[in-house]
Image (cartoon, rainbow, N blue to C red):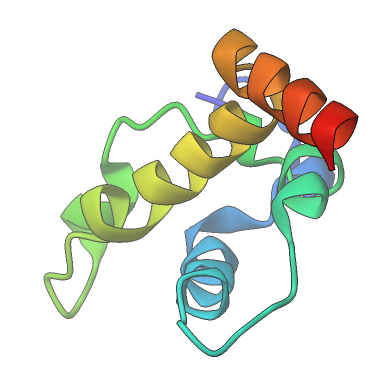
Length: 95
């Protein structure tokens, strides 16, 4: 666990702010791209999806499933998906 075992508090913004970013990132009228920040400065990669935050959520919101996992999927699509990289390259080449 990133916080309990590794004490990396400064590099991980935590579930509260990840959900705030998810609300902004997934809003249909929002045009800001936060994916690079999530990966490089906000530490989304340190979330290991153990659902600890969902278990202790006072409102019983499934924040892992409804917010954090979709954010992590966007980061993976942007930076680690080989087909996505080919698609971006082709799109650039023919635009």
